[in-house]
Amino acid sequence: MDKRDLFRIEDDELISQIAKDYPALTDKETERIFSRINKKLGEDQKAEMYHEAVSGVERYHRPVWQRILGIAAGIAAVTGIAGSAVLLNKSAPKPVIVNDTVCSTSPSDTLPAAKFLTDSFLEAASLINGQTAPEHSGKLVVFLRDESETDNSGPVYSPVTDTSFVVPADITGLLEDIVTEEYMAELRDNGGDYFSDSIDLISGVVKENEYPSYIEFCGELYTIVNDGEAPSYTEEPTLMNTGQTSFTVRRSDGAPLYFTIVWDGAQWRIDNIERKSS
Image (cartoon, rainbow, N blue to C red; front, side):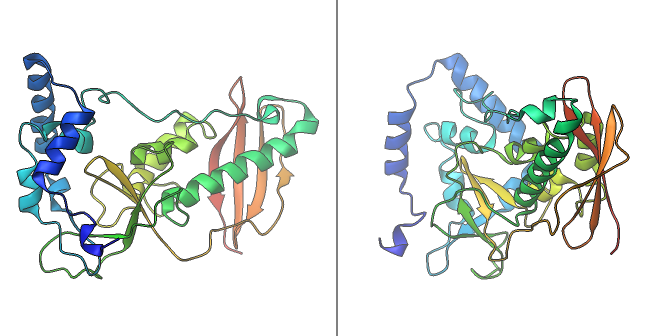
């Protein structure tokens, strides 16, 4: 495929595709859509700071983005900003704990539950941090903030093909079924002792990070692509301070990690993670 075809969108082609994918709207629906566009643009001006380019391919400049904000392309804009008329309230299915030991208080299930929760946390954390990426296409993209940047000045992203992830919040949402509400609030606020910053800031849920792990652009979710190895534990879980409603698990990813796990009445959840120096 000719590299010049990547991200080259002619207006007639775009309008034709939109007309095919989205039936005509009533005046009331159109008014509602444009109301959401204006509201979102007012709340998030930083979204327009992103410019898109691929090495060796002409840049996708702001004038092109502004041209597609016509009546026909308005629906596409809503898709990229706040979801289309059909997808305004859509979110990817939330994860469901499918592990009997996590929902069991039997002493024989404690260690398996600890292993499942800590393994699940590391997998989700690696996705949030951008250390690993969900399934994605082979298309490589560099997002440019201004005209002075070169095609190689920023990290490389790729469109996410895993349909479980539609927006960055679906990535951070992986933690919701394995941590307590209180600990989730802490992770969103400051990242706790495990993350370097708020998980919403790191992942791109809050669009204030220069290079987040995920970027929404024109209705697609893009993941940052790294060549490094995914983090892993260097030891099996060790139980400590075991009680009827809480226990501690020691693991290590190069430095000791202590997971506080509590029973919430229905299942075990991670309530805190403390990192200690070796």
